[in-house]
Length: 417
Ligand code: EPU
Image (cartoon, rainbow, N blue to C red):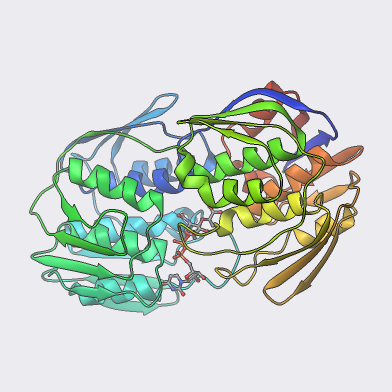
């Protein structure tokens, strides 16, 4: 097991460069398989989720050439095989392979996808989209066999703007016959990134960035070069860290619009931010005031920043209330924050935080990716030493977190025990 040790209380200065977006990369990599030749993806984050996707590509006999930040994917030798549970259970995004294999071969057999245990996370909307596009689905013991003699465009009204279902519907519809309209589609920037890449590959998708996406099916898709957008959740996490400990800390390579819901909140709380075209500068503030918010789909406040933000609120004066609207189990960091000295009460979907409270280092556990980020931030602020166990969850989503934090002055060490 890997653990992380942090000596808290050090001010942070210099520059953190934000990596390519995890949740874009994990969709774009499977999407490349729709092409009949080579695709080059740049700005690939060096994280465990990408290592796991690479294993699936190898398993499907796809040729992969990975350099430090790029991935060249050649599909000419690819074969359609049943992806074993051992691979599909590693991450949620493995179900994007379901869509691309269905779109390309009209047949796929795969296990239910994995991902952080932050709620029930059903896939009913994806299956609904597959059915509306003409597929038949057989399910036994969490293994899905999905096939179609022909995939045909249709109107797909999603019950909720699910990121995964929107992506899966797009991935199948691009190679289906005729026109598909996805209504109540999710609008997250990672979906826009996917559509931009697919259009470069020859797809005909319009309605980019809106909740109604129209796809004119095409017969074939070809290769292209594509740069993945910067990771807005990594950018938000470091901005929160800077709010607590920054000394003119620069968060570089960001798209400010993508984190506007966070920066607006921080400014409302009294944080001094300098926002430029592709970077921001943040200074710590010891006059943070409490606030309340609800998580929401984009462009609302992202659920993925909720747990890091709760740590910030432990240092704000007054009573803050956070309502988690997307997942039913995304407060698993809170018992550990309380163990470190926070005063947080959970009532169903709401966390009430009374601050400011002094945090002290102790032993905690990263139960999921963003819980890990929340505890890491707490450890950076706390007095003394914090040990975080199970940090593989954290390494799934944050590139070189130890190096990036050490470079700006944090005292942090990753150990194998
Ligand atoms: N939902 C359903 N049925 C469905 C699909 C979703 O009920 O068929 C529900 C889910 O249970 C959840 C809500 O709708 O309560 C939102 O789920 P969504 O499908 O939008 O999320 P996802 O595609 O599974 C992606 C990100 C998550 C991020 C969410 C919301 C990836 C690989 N994952 O998940 O990222 O929290 O969108 O923005 O893109 C993370 O990075 O830590 C992470 C969990």
